[in-house]
Image (cartoon, rainbow, N blue to C red; front, side, top):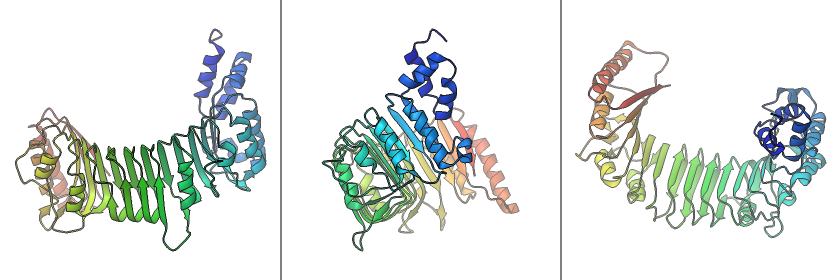
Length: 419
């Protein structure tokens, strides 16, 4: 170990994660102590990872963090996540940021202070590439002054911000590629809450737990769009057809528009969502490059709507991964077995049920026949705690049917997951 260059030791210490482990390791010898001071590039303080933090006062914790940070030079990554800690002194936190800001590339900040610390003002015009803020408030954004010329990834979680300031913040990030918005508190300027964002360089956006009347996003480079647990009246994506990944999970939206030119879509993942199938199908039907299609716990706006495998096979010839959850309503399966076209390229099949019956195993068999090149099948099931004799018999019959069925398809790897 004594022959290791001090720079290598600095890299090792930077990968330990927690600041407490770094401090303990740095007392190994003089060389390791030098590495922690001059060649440490990443430092993380997390109240959840370190039980001793809960046994000391916020003031004592401030002193420990201050001593640790001020013993370093050239920090590139700083993470301060204090979920379980009461307020810190704003002046102390400002000192940490002022000391590290010139070399900092990554900042993960979840600290409650009194008064609030203006991160944008302190870290703007620097070399920051990743910024994640939580439990903070942002007001009065000035794009010309609070500019982030190198920022590529921005995450805001439980942050209070107005729709205008959010829009201006994106304007201040000319190289932004990834954006996460989680449980934002959008300040209302009028009765209708509308967010309009524009970012020509944005490639990925994740939105969770946000309620809005209108959410409009203009992004000509967007490739990934993920909406989760949101309530929206209107969501509109304005782009030039670069979207490749579209996922929507447990979202309530009246009008959904992800653009007309979506020929490059490769992944469509829809779950816990009510769709108008003809309109949704029309939206994705031109995506001939689609590799993965997942329709899970999807409700149809019209009870008579049925998605047949023939439609999927014809429209998505390059499909390799298909996931469908089984639902029988009034004797009709939502994913019918009409037609004769095979899913030639499907290699992974995920099938599931919420309420099982004897027709499920028949449905599985027909799907297997339509996927001649299948390599792996995963069956997801829901099993309640209390079972009647009839329900137990159905489950037993299903098990027997699957055992017999898989003897015909020996080349397919089978997995079961129950909840």
